Length: 335
Image (cartoon, rainbow, N blue to C red; front, side, top):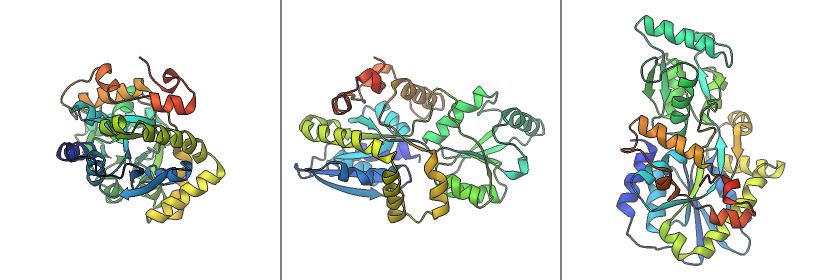
């Protein structure tokens, strides 16, 4: 089960269970990943508000809490947002968060220089002609999976016929590369940094030269919370408008690293290598969200093609626009 599918299943179960969170308290939640743990710093950017932070190892637990009202605001990724939109579930994106952090890595046995796509294409065609297509580990349905599936055709590779995409969770990609069961992988940070540090693979390319760019994480609330607590949503948007610039400062980076160390066991070397690849950004570019949705439909990760209007129903630029002074268009609304 992909993260996006798990999230949808949890929301289907939880929707309609009622709002149990204290009306004066804002509960912020995120998964445990290098990108996501920046959300633990949001409460400090919301003075005068009663804000608590929770982190989850299981996305299903986070999403159940979000749908039931026990969690006010959660951070998910854009593939999960599209999956929810495809099911018509009542979740609305109100801010971007952190993008980037995807790394396409290749086995040293391929002897590929960084960004040498012609050589990669040659290797892929040779392997296919020999009846043993290159195997690429990808956690299906994730942002990284979609980014690579959009990137490969632009370089002359059909991800469905020219290579063999293999569903491997991020945690298992290092082992798969080390034992030779795959030839390349598309992990998220900090898994990529750990893989490279252990010489299981080497950095080949960042998969951002495609229509979805480097979109990764997004901040969401339930439609019920948006309707019943518009003042709190405004405060959350104000907090995000302060948090994102803070994450780009030296002090913000140090606080972010401290949060990753607090909530995970990621080695210091991997954190150091991963941080420069993470890009804080609260914009929500609709054209890139549409590209993700189109790719997910092409891969049969969602049951139907989503129109721009359907996607737009799950993105509200108003709170962030008011918080930042930027117009919805400047924040990514192409309506």
